[in-house]
Length: 175
Ligand code: NI
Image (cartoon, rainbow, N blue to C red; front, side, top):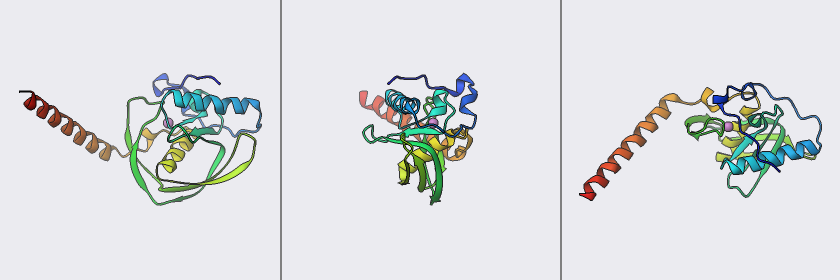
């Protein structure tokens, strides 16, 4: 396994904006790619990483919300979306920036594992968000393309106000 370089939007790499191709051969190279994605994601403290983020335009990504349970998806297809949720998202390719994005509350998808076995999985809440975020990467779509600007600015203002009033209190207590 190896840690690969994660492309950033600031690199102006086309790989982050292109549509990835389906995986056709389930071989040792695919297994190495999936292992490397996993290691690279863990190293960067991420919860998901897609192949195009390391410059490989293939439809594959890995997810681990807790760093213990790992999921890998090859040639995923979303077959059902239900409900909505809005939460804050970041991306290892856009470090230090966060925005609120509307996503389905539940997704059902089919995908293949590294051995070419097809499976179906239902995902809810944060897992559904992670799947949709990584799935978007396979089509060259990033959260900055679809986030709620107004809500994000409002939340950031609130956070800033809270922080400055906390600092004020600290200052007063210190005196
Ligand atoms: Ni991302």
